[in-house]
Image 1 (cartoon, rainbow, N blue to C red):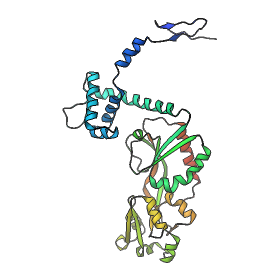
Image 2: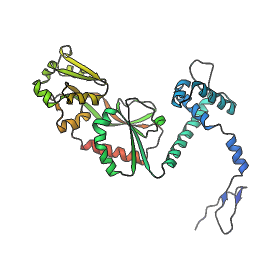
Image 3: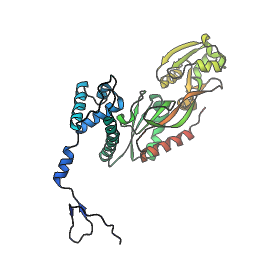
Image 4: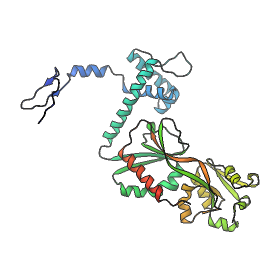
Length: 327
């Protein structure tokens, strides 16, 4: 058997009857190295300030007071005996030394976070995803049981929010967002496009005798924050000024729920309305569909590696999308 030769260290200890050499640094060398490192909490403060370019935002993210994070920054600069922040300018800017130090600190903190997470959950596979409440309620959650059956060893944590959160700060491995695919600090891949069309409950359609798009001007049109009716009505050659508009819902799932309860006509997204259309709680009005300007994207933290859990979840998502019967 070939044994690779290693250069002997002055601290190498050869054990009897063993061919392998074990290198051990002396305790005083380890103590000297650790004592020269800045405290970890000051590095976290510096990374947040450098990333957010704001003491106030960094303090909020780390749940510190402005005074406390300023003190930590001063302590770090004192430890390094150099200035990291250019205080001659009104806006936050890093000195050349600060930029150089941030380029090293950021990946080191990320690696520490990843290995700590790995050690903390060594016996379980965990997946944290961040999604819009409407997408979670109307499409993801009804299907998620199938993922649990296929991957019982993966512990899934779903956070539903409309806020565009920092995935690294939130500890999220993946997000599903609706928009143009341009979010700073992320890598995005298209999940699926969207189409818009009017829907209402079958009882509402029957009661108001809605047969054509021209009948929309006789009923209340429900609204949400994402898609005003103007573009669809223009495509349908309908005058928006002659229409009756109802309340505005700040969540598309609420708009569809209002339509299901007979409150009016909603301008539905195809993916969110798919199950309701299939189940019969909603029906389409007319055959016109308008391509949405936004789409659903899979969003990854830009510098994070794609774990096996993320890969398996994404593959499952795409398989579910292929199975979905869209209208």
